[in-house]
Length: 250
Image 1: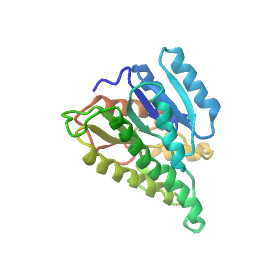
Image 2: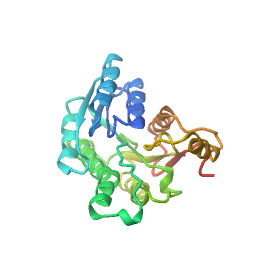
Image 3: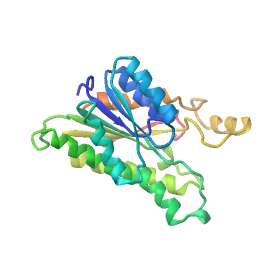
């Protein structure tokens, strides 16, 4: 499937990976709806760079724990062009030991990290159908979904139970939707290793973490974005989780 001149919806486009994905897709000729929650200045920078490169881009704020906000993303995307790619990159990443679990805190993590990709996928498919695309007659993919999972889904971290559970669920969702939407839509996931850590690390902590990675360093956001682009380029990969962790999970 050729993605140039189509539009991508990228959630979490103000984050390190989301920004890199949006920029990578724009470099490949796509227009982008760049979703953000709080960091307006970061997403505005992305939009400026994309538009300066001659593509269309718009920033749309939304709380992905709110279904109405999710629906609004796809209403806005219609104004940019034909949407054929969905990138679920937004996530909450918080340290929270078991003793601190509550319905409110765990519920929000699961809502943003797992329920939101379910709903964005639903509205994405509804948009495709509204444009007259016939799923029953498809012989090859005409749209793509890529979910940003995490190696924590496969090798969980202590005190990040809600995050790890949500990302593991996202991998399960990826496989389920790949079967349900084939062959019209491919659905894949990328499971990155450490790119950035939300809490400050001492030099000793950084060295300790990097020593466990055969590649000897943390990933760059651009490398994760390149992995997303690889999955978009290939029409015969679906239901797959591509681990991009420098060998950390070996």
